[in-house]
Length: 348
Image (cartoon, rainbow, N blue to C red; front, top):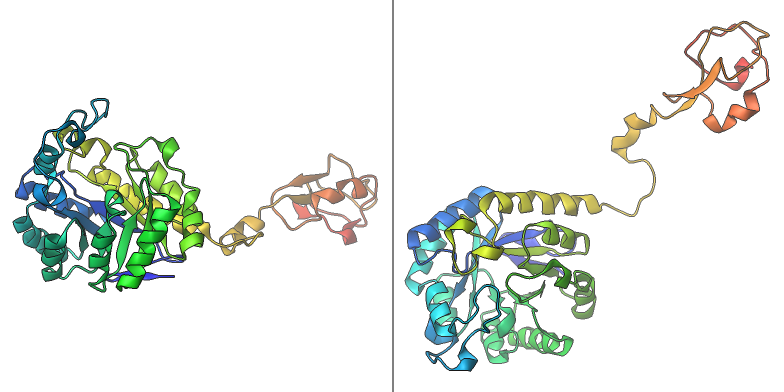
């Protein structure tokens, strides 16, 4: 149940793959896009993801109500879809320099295509994998086209029912995908943490028999770090240079220092899962030496009674267990004993 994305293995038992999504946070500047690539590489994140579309390949230029985002939307309220995508898209001609910069840094780079022209471009750039965005999960012809490349597919499941996910997974498998990773996702921007429903991660893994990760749009890194405990093996977060610079996705994007923290803390969370073993670990061996035990805490002579004044439960270990205190009180010492001697049965 492991999928290879470039040099990275994604699945149970593997460290979480941290994927930084640039999206439209380049704010229309190739220089800024390349600066984001540099920042992602410096953060220690493992992969960079783009979105490959033109406004005309994702929607049409119509200003009817159906093509406008609801006024109450907290981030893009009232915006026309075409204008939003015009502002947010990454021009096709930018892809090659972005890919080149990412690869020079050793980053794995892939993208979400939205039509056949995007797939054709990304194939020329030899992407190691493809991502299907949540809204495109129901576009089975697109999934079939992407699967036909024979590359691994990462499929985001925001808004989807189990039946819709099943149809997408079946289409990808039958179409020839080299492997599938599903991403739990709440497709709201930004997403409230209470809608994350991280407990669905193992359910998705058990239901579909594939690795499962998280595409997260909540503020901060708490939710994705928590997801690792429930088995998330790929974490995707939007990234920007500075949220104060604005941009279509800046409100729910991480800054480079936060992305670096996510990379470190998600791997720590994964390492902390450990095993089901209950008992001392190898690193606790020194601690075992300093457990409490019964010690003689005052110089005594043979024949002296054992009292609370001359025998106590203290650190370190080495003497009788503290639970034996009631058994030894009132007995007498068999020999002279100096202060600091661990109590043993032969001394009383």
